[in-house]
Length: 318
Image 1 (cartoon, rainbow, N blue to C red):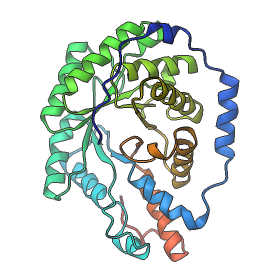
Image 2 (image 1 turned 120 degrees about the horizontal axis):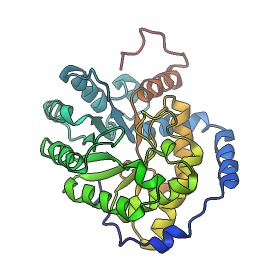
Image 3 (image 1 turned 60 degrees about the horizontal axis):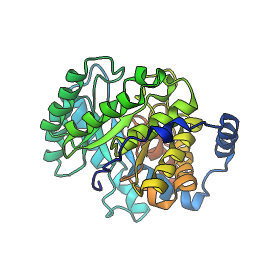
Image 4 (image 1 turned 90 degrees about the vertical axis):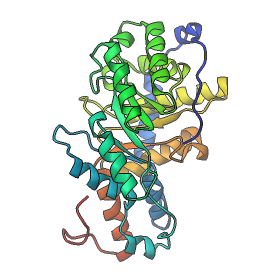
């Protein structure tokens, strides 16, 4: 991944002027969802691009060393080799962008990836995921421990109360502390947009997170009632674009929660291309947080290669 985004001084005058035009955002979201899918001859290429942007994730209470090991193997070999050979892509080193696990499972992931001989990054959720309702001291220590265990990316959750009550300086200060605790690890800030109350709050929280030095802003934990939606994504992407225009700093975007189909991944890639341009269509600046998406992408690639839809025995379990 690229060097850290250093952030800027807090500019509350900028934050105070923000007001999102909700009807315009909803119209734009409808346009995106109504867009025709990528043509067949390009679809496989776009699906493979989506694979390289996936943070392959397991965040279950019953996670064990063995299922993390299986996840890491799938991250290294996300698409069956014979399918890649049919597309002449078997020698391109296609892997997922990262493996994402709970802090207690970081050591398992690091060990499994080392044994597999690959350098896929290990990302870990932290700071009282998913609610963020633990003491700040505990949340900071959780980051440090995950980094010590080998995580090179940390997905933090913000204190939603600070957004809902308009405590923007406190939110900035909190994320700055997360940034410091991450050390050399990259900081991905989860806004939990389904719990922020309004699209205006989503924009403001996005801007504060970027000012505070976040390398990525992420829609959701995947545990909220409402996760990644296109209206929210449009607002966050416009904030990323505005921040880039004002500071020259590029911040990544990660939708997460409810993205399960290959068709969904194509729509998300199209949205990134249209809103931010080709520069953002790479794992350094775009990630998809998902646990089941990869299986459907592999099924669609199988169909593209063979002309048949995969039966139960045609593809391995993910």
